Length: 359
Image (tube, rainbow, N blue to C red; front, side, top):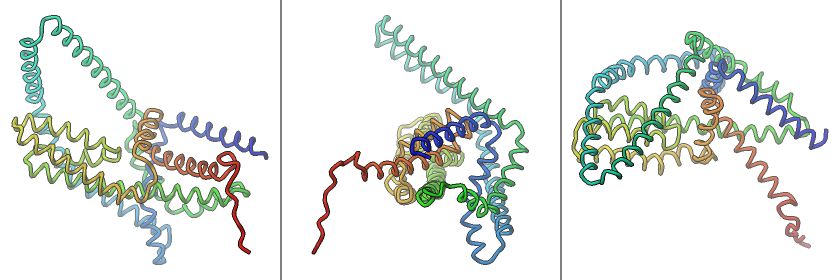
């Protein structure tokens, strides 16, 4: 098979893969989640097998440990989140009244300072922004609802995901050998090397980002609680979960926290304290945690990660968000491999420097 035919074959296979992914995106989430859990638990299974524990039993023990940790987190934090969520819902009318009062105050000041025609322009501009915001909010709500409908049977999700994780953990050596037997023999070594790089990239990001999210969420929950902010624990958990998207967790968290602080305290001192808490958290995460826990393991730029999350989320919904990082890792490894081949080829330098032999 010529190089051109090989390229066309792999491009056609890639197109078929994305087409099937799009058509089956509504039912693949339990399988992708199961693969993700298996990926996280694979080091534990490997550790147990080194102690001569049969792989099937090691897989079962690792999965039971994971489910126990999830149940423990639910028992410890869900009641607290429910309490703070109920308090937040109870205070929502007061928050709306506060925002309306502040908006009216700003409107009164604008009426005193601006001429009538400029005031009308401002009203029209605010009205346009409000309409755009409502439209965007409606589209987000519709997207969330459609994602919820795609997960119509939550019981099925909860049953299939652990089963998939168990079978993948148990049978991964067999799966790996089977996939290896399908590789083109002329390029098998090169493909194996690139797959190892992809594996290292994904593992480094998942394990590093999990630690960063845990540390960041715990810090914000404790620091905001010390500052006296209501709903601090719930806000810390939200920021920790969203922090897998670079900068998104801090931005959303500081907006919510400043709004809550303004409604709760009404003084610039407390609001400034909340802003400083987020500034210290961001600087620590950006300059210490992420470089040490993620940057040294992953060769993916934050902008590329954000683009992959948004693009795959737009194309495939919740499933796309889960697949964004593996896809970004694969593409990143392939691009670096192609670049290294290009730099070593005559296309880059048709007159490479001559090496001098020593007599």
